[in-house]
Amino acid sequence: MQIEVCPARIDEEALKSAMMAEGAVPRDLADALAEGKARKISGKFSSAFVIGCDQVLEHDGVVLSKPADISQARAQLMAMRGNRHRLFSSAVIYQEGAPIWRHIGEVRLTMRAFSDAYLDSYLARNWPQVGESVGAYRLEEEGVRLFSRIEGQYFHVLGIPLLEILNYLSLRGVIEA
Image 1 (cartoon, rainbow, N blue to C red):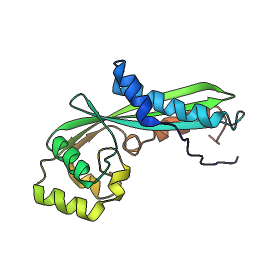
Image 2 (tube, helix red, strand yellow; image 1 turned 120 degrees about the vertical axis):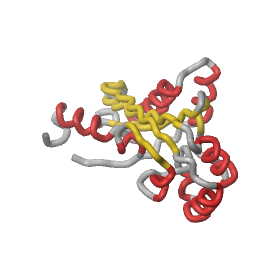
Image 3 (cartoon, rainbow, N blue to C red; image 1 turned 45 degrees about the vertical axis):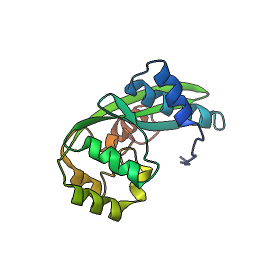
């Protein structure tokens, strides 16, 4: 079996804006983004199993995007400080130009009430890397220190419902069971 990583160049912000204008919920946004990526790459590799993944963060009814700069990262983290937010992690598998499987996982995360001093030192140490992550944190790195509680699967926080994907591929015989 050959595995290849192919970034899907889709206009995520335009898709999110259009769907939110129509009243889409964050769960549906994550699903649509993952499907858009899988569909685009599936056009190039129609017989392959193409996995598209994406993640959407919702806090107090607002969908957050990756921060554009360190000040936006600070504002996002300050808004979430001491509060709970949700991450929706979606995967869609395409084959021969059609979706054959999908999964959307949800994780609830509660940030601790960290100090302004800690926030500033955290950003100084971790910027610009955390700017590549929705919510301005990476759970697999120092970002885990921002949280007091996490309810859900670790891989969902990383942006891929990995256990569900592996189970599906095993059942289909794509990978050894």
